[in-house]
Image (cartoon, rainbow, N blue to C red; front, side, top):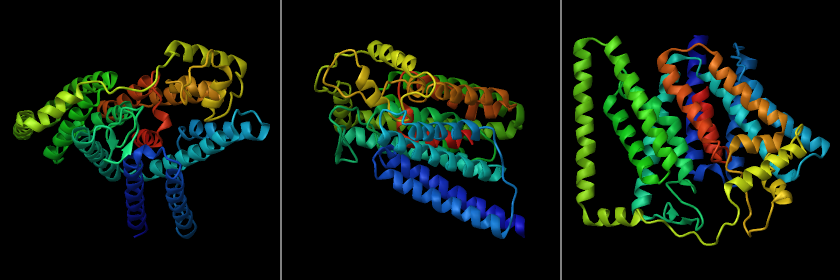
Length: 402
C-alpha cells in the first residue's frame, strides 16, 4: 500500500512538473519578471509537499552527481553577493533565484523519473509539448508574424510562436524532437499522434528561419530515423513491423496531403511568400560577434576566479565595450562564454562536469539518441546563441537530463 501511495504521489508530482514546463514555454519562455514568482511558488509548494511526505512516510531519496554543477552556480552567485564581486547585485540575486529554482526542479524530476512508467509518460508529454508549441508557432507565423498571440510585439526581434527569438523555438525543438521520433516507432506507442507531433516540429523549424536550427533538426531526423528503424527491425516481429510501416506511410501521406492543400490556398500561399522576405530591424549594429567575443575574453581575464557576477553579463560588458554603438548588449550570444564571464572558473567547471557526467554513464542506444544527442546539440548550438536566458529552455533541458 505504501509503495502504491508513493507511486501515485510521484505521478501527481510528474503532472505538476509537466504543467509547470508547459506554462514556462507558452508564457513567452518565462522571460518576463512575473514568471519567476509563478515558477518559484509552484516549486516551493511541490518541495513542501515532498518534505511533508518524507515526515509522514519516509522514502529513499534518489541522488545524482548532476546535483553538483546545478548547485555550483547559485553557490558561486551567493559568494559573489557576499563578497561584493558582481557588476550588478540585482541581476545576480535574480539569477541566483532562478538557479535555485532549476536545482529544485531537477531534484524533483530525478526523484519522480526513477520510475519507468513515469519516464514514459513524461516522454510523451514532451512530444506533445513539441507538437503543440509548433502548431501555435505555425498559426502565429501565418496570421500574426510580428506579434506573439496576436498582441505582444517585439519590433527588433524575430518572433516565432511564444518566443521572441526564432532560435529559441529551434532550441526547444532540438531538445524534444529525437525522443518524439523514437516514440513514433516504439512498439506499443500510439504512433500516429507521435508522427503528427514530429511533422509539426519539422514544419515549425522549417518556417522559423533559424538556419542552424534547421540543420540540427535535419541531422537529428536522419540519425533518429536510422536508429528507430534499426531498433524496430531488431526487436519487432515481422507482423508488428508491417503494421508499423503501414501506419508510418499513412501518417506521412496525411502530412503530405495537408501540405499540398495548404500551399494550394491563395491566402496561405501569399502569407508564405511574404514570410520569405526579411523583416526590417530598425537601427544599425556597429559591433559584430567578433567584437563581443573579444570583449568577453578580456572580461574573463580581468576576473578569472569569481567572474563578474551571475546574470550580470550586460552591465559587465557595458564597462568594457570597445566602442559605443547605441545598443544595449544583454547577451554575448554564447552561453559557455557568458558563464565564463559571469562565474569565472566556476562557470567553466560547471560545464565540464556536466559534459563529463553525460559521457561517463553507460546507456543503451535509445537513451543516447533520445537524451544525450539532443542535450549535446543543445550545448553545441549554445556556443553561438544564448538559450539559457530563456528559463523555459533550461527547464526543458533539465527534464530531458533527468
